[in-house]
Image (cartoon, rainbow over all chains, first blue to last red; front, side):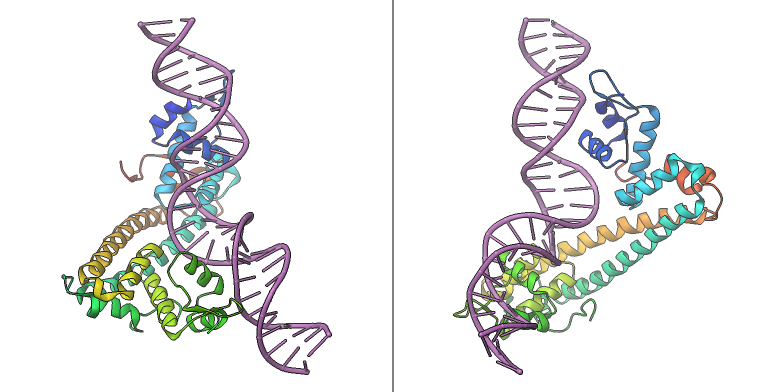
Length: 139
Length: 139
DNA sequence: CTTGACCTTAAACTATACTCTAAGGTCTAT
DNA sequence: ATAGACCTTAGAGTATAGTTTAAGGTCAAG
C-alpha cells in the first residue's frame, strides 16, 4: 500500500500520516526502491488504532504510549493501559465540569436578555459581565 | 495605575495585559512622560470584564466583540450580545456531547480491564482499540 | 514521449493564547 | 550614587495537531 492507499483505507490524510511518522507513531514497514513508503495490513491496523485512540480523547503522546503497549504486549502490563485510561477519564471529567459550569452561567446570561433591537444600554448580558455577578474560576 | 498595579488588581499578568493591548482589547487610557502605561479605574473594569468573559468560555475574539458593545452601548443592540451568547451555548453543548461520548467509551474500556500486573497480551483496552468496537466520530 | 497522478523532502504556516527573553530605560529608598 | 524594583520594546518560544508549499522525482496510460 502506498500512502495514498492508506489515506483512503484509514481516512487519515497523507499529510497527517507523514506527520505521525515524524512523531514516531506510525512507521511504514518498508520503503520501495523509489523511496516511496510501503504500508502493510498491520500498518493499516495501527493507523486505525491511532484514529480510535484519538476518538477516545487521547493526545498523540498518550496514543504513543498505548501504541508502545500494543506493539510489545509481553513487555507491558494491564496496569499501564488502565492507568492511562483512568487519567484520561479524570481529565475529561474535569473538562466536562468546567464546561457545564460555563454553560449554566451562559444560560442565565441568555435567559434575561431580551435579544431585541433595543439599544444595548441596559443589556443584561453586558452588565452582568461588567459587574461581579459571575463566579470566576479560581476565586 | 501602572501595569504592575493592574496586574495585582485584576489578577491578569502584565505579560497578558500587554498582549491584550496588542490584540486591541485593552488600551491603557494614557501614557506617562516616561512612556509607562497608565490605567484608570475604568480600565480595571474592562480588565475584569475580559476575565469574566473568558471564564464564560468566550474566545478573545468573541470577547472583543462583547467589549465593542460594552464600549459603545448606544450603537449596539441586545440582539448582538444575545446572538454571541447563544452561539457559545451551542458550541459548548456540542463540546460537552463529544466529551460525554468519549467518557462513556473510556469508562467501558476501563471497566473490563483487570488493571493488574498481568501481561498486556490480553488487555481489553488495547484489544478494543485494535478492533472495530469503538464508534468513531464521523463514521 | 508527454501528461497527469502520485510520490519525496524540509521547512514554513495555521490557530489560540499566552509566556518569556534580551537589552535597555526609570524610579525610589538608602 | 547605587541597588533593586519596576517599566519599555521587538521578537522568539511554548503547546498541540496538523496543513500547506516549493521544488523536485516517479509511474502508468495514451
